[in-house]
Every structure is written in structure tokens, then in C-alpha cells.
Image (tube, rainbow, N blue to C red; front, side, top):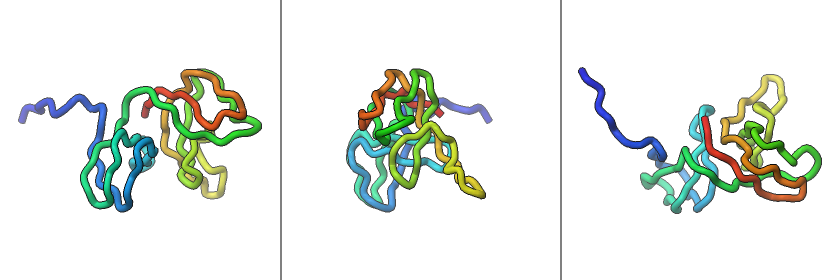
Length: 118
């Protein structure tokens, strides 16, 4: 059977258990993160962007002035990005990848500009 083109792949379908606000980062398993460009109601089919350039939430303080090119991950507990791929626990919990830093933020910045990637 020949495989047929389905779609561009800039978005993935998602039906959330709870409502998702515009700009929210949503973990799609442990393999990727999508961002809601539009609100998605609980139990309703919507789309999450998995490609593009976005400002995403980050913690502030020491060690959060990520260098350009740093790969970031979604800390699923805080909802903010980190440069750590796991929570550091034993056993470690893996964080899904978000993307690559495009502009180095200051430690006082609450957001960082990233290119989404898997």
C-alpha cells in the first residue's frame, strides 16, 4: 500500500481533558511539546503547534540566562522550560523537549524565544 501525504505537520491534533489556554505548552507524551495558538475546550478536538518560533515561560534567577542554541525542556511540574532533560530524581522523570534558544534571555526575563523542535 502506498503511503499518501496527510498534512504539513506544523500542528498535531489534541483533545485535552481540561481546557487549554492560548499560549499554553502541552506535553505530548515525553517526545514533544505543542503550543496552543487558539483556546481548546476540555474534551474538544483542537490543534497544537509543533513547529514555529514562540516566547515560552521560563523560571527567573541564577542559571536561567540560557545561551543561544541551548536545548530546552518542559518542566511538567512548573509549566516552565529548563535546560535539564530530567527532574534529577531517582528514578529520574524525563521532560519532553520544547526547542532551541534563539535569543539569550536575562536571568530576570520571565520568557525566552525558542524555535520549537523535537
